[in-house]
Image (cartoon, each protein chain N blue to C red):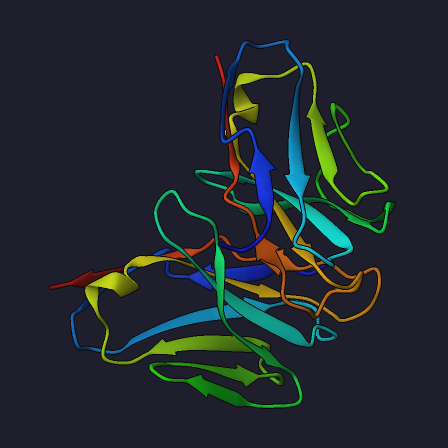
Length: 114
Length: 113
């Protein structure tokens, strides 16, 4: 158990819908990262938050947004869902805002768009 | 930005043999190189990492070597076991507040019993 908690574990929704994925980082970790994993795309970095502020941005679509709350949990919002958004979404956390430190992954949220 | 590549995409070895997985990176300023192992349906887990101030690091059957001049690093697994079968991801990043970890696409290692 990495200490990073993600909910829901599985989610099936229809195209055009909106979903919210939730992540609680390890106790004491200030950074939260979101990654998307599709079958043929490996681990794609979406976005990072550090202590409530956006720190780094990757290939995150405009239909996606995220935030980190004062209690440090984070939510990833996916809207106007398309079939291609079906993937495993990982949240990860680390104790610092900079890279070069170990990041710990949660178990992931499986999203299926039908 | 950083680009990390892993080749080949799959590797099959006989149990007991050694496996070597190679990665290349593009940004010469990168100085942190972790390796993650992901078993089917599970989360990636860090198995070893190396920083640019060292050329090699070992942890039991696992070792990582780094060649900064050639911009490549490798994961070495000795005495492979069936439970080593998984997808292995390499990654690279600079240290610093606004840097991010860039992952390769992963290599599927199969250990034949």
